[in-house]
Length: 402
Image (tube, rainbow, N blue to C red):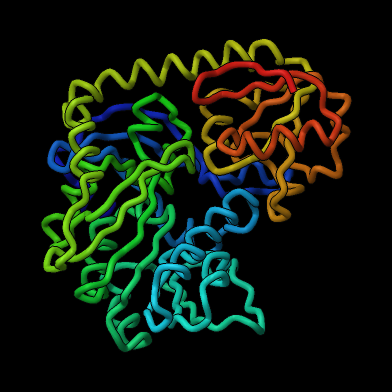
């Protein structure tokens, strides 16, 4: 257990029991070999952060990784839009480092005139292409790797990018310390993280899994980076991941001021009691209620029916395990990611197929586990010939007709 978890100021909010790694997909005969680990959501009095009390060995999670940034077309478009914004707004002599660069979906969209670097512990997801004009460092991003990064890049970094990665380690403080060590005096970090106010506060518990060690509000993020010498200069809510925070961070010594957006969002969180332990103590009942709604509306009604599971994102694995999807005797799933196809949803007996293997017209009921991609997936279901009802578990469990 990391020292950051040995904190007397942590309060238990919800105990999910034992859960598998959300990206640990196994072949059908290997279901019994999927290890499970405690998943407990805590609240920290000091930082006001929602976080887990412990995390399995990060080497086992991230060194050989099954998630590809390019697997979701919606996610790929989002990363492309970030790259295009940087291309349009920054001079091409800037040094850029992407943390958690995965398969280089974003890096490949940046102008080649930038000095581009990426860092990611997984060595299995990136496949070099001849046109690639960037260097990827296969290490974790923390204070231990800072010296190696400095030796490779040689100069302070102008722009550090981290999209859905700065909540993914129990050494989150070190990750921000690494930003401080690497960032140029007038540089900035573009960070995006799932926003607890849009997800967990609404009892959308599917964002809580081992890889999401932290669940940030802007207040908790400010409390964590302030002692390091960093400041949030801009912030906005965006729709990705069911609700995210996009923030721009610089050194406190930077001449850039703090935007009104930051002040307004901090005041919003204060008004909604996101710094009050009593607010979080009520979350347990809200999460129980949503789990029971999903079980009653979807599981209990379809125990012996043929049902189709649409998409198997990481968050969907938590829903499937928490809400007893394994009780569905005739369920199958499909997902576009080739690496998931022919394997089981972790912790269940539900087999994942490619869309081409599914006879969509025969199913009367489906469940959209990948609900954050609803706008993209529902038209596709219709094109595939699905004409039944689709159950959408979040943010409000309900059925919709295609």
